[in-house]
Length: 353
Ligand code: TXA
Ligand code: MG
Image (cartoon, rainbow, N blue to C red; front, side, top):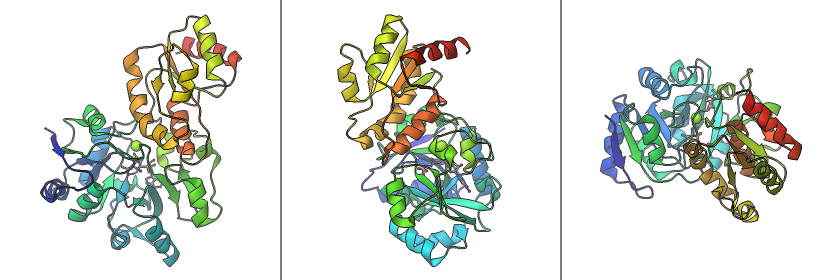
């Protein structure tokens, strides 16, 4: 049985937080909201609880979890080798949607770090998450979805994926950003491992230049696995998804001429240009935060439409747009359409499935 605990996201009820924190301390699994996406939490110092997180999600054991803390004082209990400079940066950016990879402290079990000597750490900017950690312990948590599905941005996504498999789900409404945290390795020179709501532009304000490996920029799966999660398929709907890098208008015109059975995901502005066509709306192109917030929910709903394939608009890779495009590219398995001639590619790809 999974208990659903509804908690006020801006003013969490202390007695409900105590109950959920009690479960964490007993080694149970509790899903909870953060400002990015929902996490599936376990006591970060309890190896058995961490192993159960992998089991519930069906997550490959070498894809490590992020450890969530609620104060800078806790940082020293989960990571070592923290220079004054790193501590000063952490104080500046936390709580917030940015995760740092650091050297692991001995107390953190290898089950949490996927057998690595490094640990990913962040302090989430969400009242429920902060209160829960404060009343229990540092919490190891990946996103609270089944492996390969988009991360959950509300409690019903978590219920769909994990009901019956975990002990409790805190329903704290919608998350704020809708895409997962930015990950930066600070083990050597700073390297961006995953783009997120904390933008490259903001990172450069703190670190100066930051290195962005090609596979991160291009959202490629990587065997070398800078962040082990990069080895694995992500967010992918069953319905084949193609990113349209040219005029949506032109592609839709051509697909209609060919009587294709497809659906469309795009911005409000682009949808207006498509006239009578119905599309799944991501929001206004002039507000990439709105697009980020709606993306995973819409990716989750594609399969229910039962169309043969789906096309999705491409966005500028600036600000949070880099994170949005990174998730869209991953969901598409890097299948893109660059001109009208690319439609032959779609039909070819579909024929080979
Ligand atoms: O916003 C977020 O980051 C959310 C919320 C719940 O905090 N968490 C999340 O976790 O999205 P998830 O499912 O993405 O898993 C953690 C990611 C994986 O991509 C993993 O490869 C990377 O963090 N990671 C964890 N430990 C790492 C390490 N020691 N070195 C490199 N990458 C690491
Ligand atoms: Mg995840």
